[in-house]
Image (cartoon, rainbow, N blue to C red; front, side, top):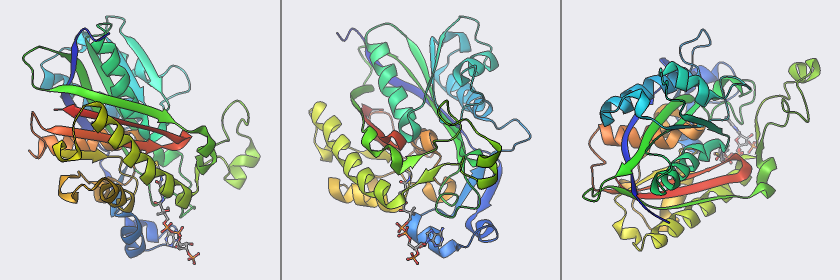
Length: 333
Ligand SMILES: CC(C)(COP(=O)(O)OP(=O)(O)OC[C@H]1O[C@@H](n2cnc3c(N)ncnc32)[C@H](O)[C@@H]1OP(=O)(O)O)[C@@H](O)C(=O)NCCC(=O)NCCS
């Protein structure tokens, strides 16, 4: 039941001011700038201030104000906020409600957090697409905002070198008949069998944090990098093919791929599997590392801002994360 077209009206981003270079990590764990860059493509990442002003809702506020301005909308034009994050400001209330208040929204818009890890933003865009197409919502603010620096064990070189903090947003809104831009096709999925490849089992209802966990540092995120790597490339390539086929297009019609930025080698392997040239792939992992739900919207926003992605271009979002969740979107920007 498609009544309306949906399209991306605008985007925004915010990254923390503090830059942490690989060389800074050499002082904390046994690693090297060369190893990290060669194995991951990461050179530096941004880390939020713990003093305030750069928590997930703060970063989302800055990014959302830019996106609202670019779309020529007022905060009260938003009728739903979908907040993708595994590092919410609080357990309660949800961060979408916190952002609603920070934006000064007084229209009682719907506010929902989704915990789909690195796929959170793509999950949000695809859900927003359905809500706009069916006419239930007109303008949905979709956020990917993460402060992973608080969940990473800075003594564990397997994880701490990979992640960073940041936020990206997009406003998904109703399109008009004459618009050439629209969301063409979506896919979402998950495979809970791979849950143990990337998890944080301490701190929820089953295993509340105890003093022992804090002493033994077992409350942080854990990852089986090799397993994640293998499943990621296969899933990213499969989902890309699904949305391209659903839209009745071919891989050659895709102007830009905006993939989740977890590891440059995952991105390159996926591009190879799809037979797509790296010139068409947006990569910024060198500057920010893996910011989970924020990687796709930050990369998308930067490529629009620097003029690479233009209105009318066919763009593929392709994401994968803990859960294991995954999702892809094909759109004409
Ligand atoms: C984590 C990851 C970078 C590790 O790269 P890798 O090439 O698989 O490296 P390995 O784990 O095989 O380690 C190779 C060697 O480097 C060492 N090593 C691991 N981390 C290191 C680090 N930070 N610095 C230096 N050496 C390191 C290992 O101990 C190992 O040494 P050994 O051969 O003496 O045993 C890679 O597996 C990865 O990016 N996986 C996917 C991550 C991901 O997608 N995460 C999130 C998805 S949303």
